[in-house]
Image 1: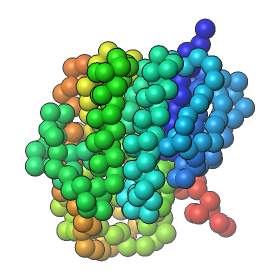
Image 2 (image 1 turned 180 degrees about the vertical axis):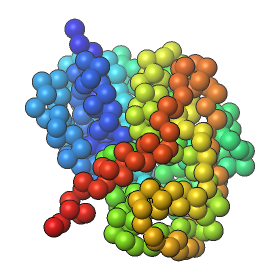
Image 3 (image 1 turned 180 degrees about the horizontal axis):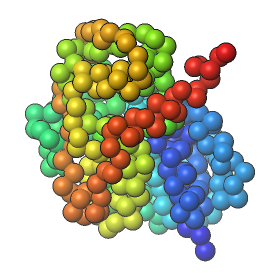
Image 4 (image 1 turned 90 degrees about the horizontal axis):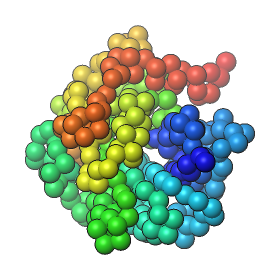
Length: 316
């Protein structure tokens, strides 16, 4: 009998790639999304698949799913600053109420549940690179606090269900990820830089560009998540690419890739924007046998070719 997985946030960037992976692995996929930031276009290619079903639902409200359920992948949440600054209450609710509802479902169905936590639990880190034993440096009342603290609470609630109710849980701390199906307007560096290049606009860098990020291609990330779900490890695991680059150098890489001649223009750094972001993936290597395989140059080329196909850039 086929195993069944519930994927929340299924119409989002990461959720849709997870749907593809689980279908390829022979699972029955129950996809759930309220479409507040996700898009059906990311999963419409699966609508006719016999093992795929879609539920339009907000998991902040009670979640009922008839039938057997073996796994839950909890990926419902706004994930970009533009989104969670626009809908801060919904961001907090999906991380708290939504997580509680799904953990209750996991308990009831005896399902194993993986939550999508984030490198943002480390805040603006005082430890570099960040490993899972670091507790973070987060401003709970700053503009990013609605996301950071929702994810920190999500981890605490998940571990409480694991400890008190013996629910099988997994915690993935996801670092910057990129690839096809990212939203152009999601406010993060990669889609912003690529869309500006495609429009012939100058590239906007916040601050002096010395802040760092570490970009992981989506296929690598999905592989790490799948391995973590199938492992027997319940403590948090960083999933990301340790190859670190400054935002200024990253902007220059995008200009070189796109063959455009834009200038880089500098704007003030947003409040509480992390100055360094690099995962220590020692735990993922040793426990999951996982590390990223796709080089940034290769992944950026695939992503750029995807963005070029979007209707915004094909109006003629």
